[in-house]
Length: 294
Image (cartoon, rainbow, N blue to C red; front, top):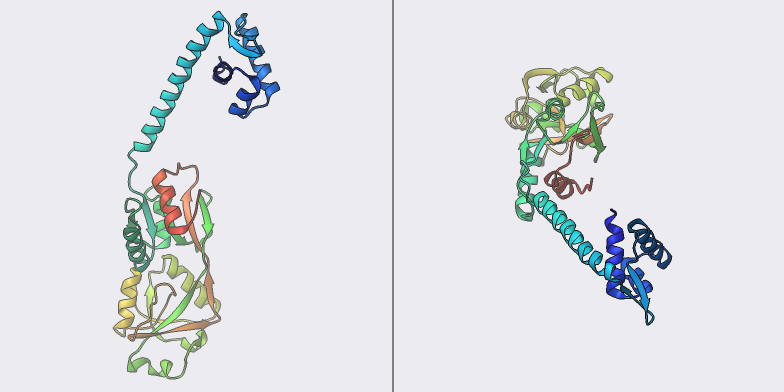
């Protein structure tokens, strides 16, 4: 039995008029009349009759309408219960991977100020490791670069492109660079310069190695560090220069920031796994932090 037909019957009995019932139900009068005739044919009885220009239930119709009201009420109660369960369902915290500890701190502060949703669990991991964790289901969302291209099992949305900058310690050892250049440095001018290497198999390490190779440049690496914030600390201490994400290299008196020539641009992506249900919590995090409604 189609409950829509029952709702139509109840509306007709309450309004006593096909036109008003059709208006109430947002359907056409012919469609409503056809539905009533189909229901009566299906049951083999007359449900409504016209009396004094008004449609009123027949004796059989009154019995059937009371039963219809109970059936509709049960349906509505079930739907309401299901909606309540879904609303109160306990979802685990959203796990977000991003290879920028400074950005994580800013996101956390923003969300605390918003006071809108439960705080996600942030993972400060490199783009390559971040990709692996997302593919294994250890993350729900990942904000990363993809030096090896977009994996087939991920849905990725390109966000704002980023650039790499040259960060040079503001120490006497590097005055020959800082006194000679102001904003832009030809990357070839830094061949053989003491530098800090980001882990070679990391997203940043892969991009830097590719960029230097394309321009025939080799740095004199004095150490290799996997944590980006630690690389910035090493630069501040005067250990060497580094190519770094512009978003991570904040203004400081401990170092100077230059644009390499040729410039090094790369795309940044927001990724989720294909075929994975986006819980209400994940959707709220995507909307609040990245303005996305998926």
